[in-house]
Image 1 (cartoon, helix red, strand yellow):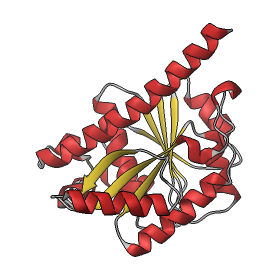
Image 2 (image 1 turned 90 degrees about the vertical axis):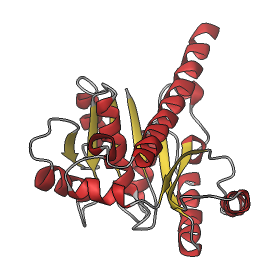
Image 3 (image 1 turned 180 degrees about the horizontal axis):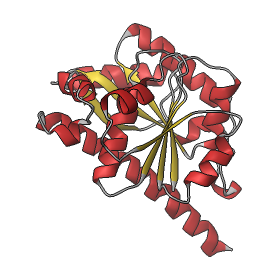
Image 4 (image 1 turned 30 degrees about the horizontal axis):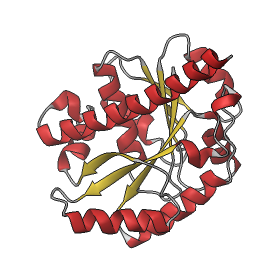
Length: 238
């Protein structure tokens, strides 16, 4: 069972979009995902689930409460094998606490000057957040060590120059150690599917969008596998 927190200090980075489509893809892959919505201002995920996705049984949803989060995760782990936390924009102790608890942190990044500035703030916040995950033997020095980047609203056709400039900008923001595990292009399919109460992997109207989400899901699975291998190695050494 993995806990994945989706964090960006800037609103509009695509946290809820990533959370919804990733959870739906996981469910289609026979996982048992739970989405926890911490965006108290919008509750975007819960509005999508209750207002547009009334008949679907998966994924499951829960309104976030920082005071009960650890207990909620413990209870959820009996029924779910993937917990995705949609974290509200901004910073503060609540965001740092969530970053500390999650095994993996995904940082959605839009390739613009404003978003790069916010991304720097996000990396700084993660750097100041502890990694309190178990076992202690594989924990990072801080939450930035378990972060990965999801590029959002990227050009459909990316030149090598664009990619190189983007990677340089991310490095300047302090995220050079965070791998890019997924790229979502600027496609109407993502918002249209959500408006229809679905994920792109269910709606199947845009094969390229489907492929991008499945690639992102595979990236998360790779992070899970890497962590699991570290745990196995640590136990063998004991």
